[in-house]
Length: 314
Ligand SMILES: Cc1cc2nc3c(=O)[nH]c(=O)nc-3n(C[C@H](O)[C@H](O)[C@H](O)COP(=O)(O)OP(=O)(O)OC[C@H]3O[C@@H](n4cnc5c(N)ncnc54)[C@H](O)[C@@H]3O)c2cc1C
Image (cartoon, rainbow, N blue to C red; front, top):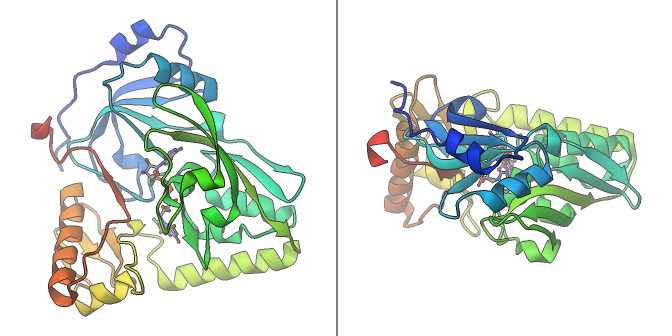
């Protein structure tokens, strides 16, 4: 892929109106390296806030018409080849605290990888969070996606969330305020989650560790977890399995360029090496069309797609 054309650099202008900003602002920062698919163009501006108050300050003073997109560990994301206009926010160290609280609770910053939440709960003898062992994202992504596996979802373990809205106001949302459904969160789209409080029940650390090992083994046997992928591409339609519909439509192994429907698990798309975001998204749309033709069922994307297809769309 040729490098995507650059966006106009807005960093100096932003710094001028944000004299107290402590986090890092970077122009035309490539996002491909921070997503699992390893594709896509740059962020016009990438902002890595120092901590929650830095993020609140930034949002409160950013021009209201500047688009803002937040990303986590990029494990459920296609960044399109033309890049992402406006500001992309990526939370780092200042959102990486994790601690155990009384009542079998775990408080974790939005940048904490899900596997660390599962591990901390296991070590503290808290049962009910082992499912997070198999989700390769961070807490913010789990909250937005209602990430789940092996019969449990984020909503089953969540007490409350802290977040910041587009105007920079800090807000606390209780579990019902998240309006969760399968792989769906109904909290306002502009809220950037900064921290979550989870709860489990008392459990035996050895048994929880065994449960986590089983999850690891089952994933290694059934999913292409070492590939450049975005996990499940489409949501399971009510009462159906997306992978079965894709298989029945003859799409297992289907390729566009270096984008391929995984042979191992056909609801996973993989980048064999030099696929572009256009190849991967195009392959996904081809799969949707074939499934529609074959079964009459409209598959809905689970993977989030952000940005613009090419620099000529700017
Ligand atoms: C091999 C593999 C296996 C997977 N298995 C599963 C599975 O079993 N179950 C499952 O549910 N998912 C699975 N996934 C998908 C993915 O890991 C989850 O959706 C995960 O929760 C995404 O987290 P992330 O940090 O990578 O978010 P990203 O992919 O970076 O972003 C996903 C969405 O969350 C939003 N977001 C991220 N951080 C924040 C924040 N702080 N505040 C507000 N919104 C935010 C983004 O804007 C975007 O809309 C798998 C993915 C892979 C690659």
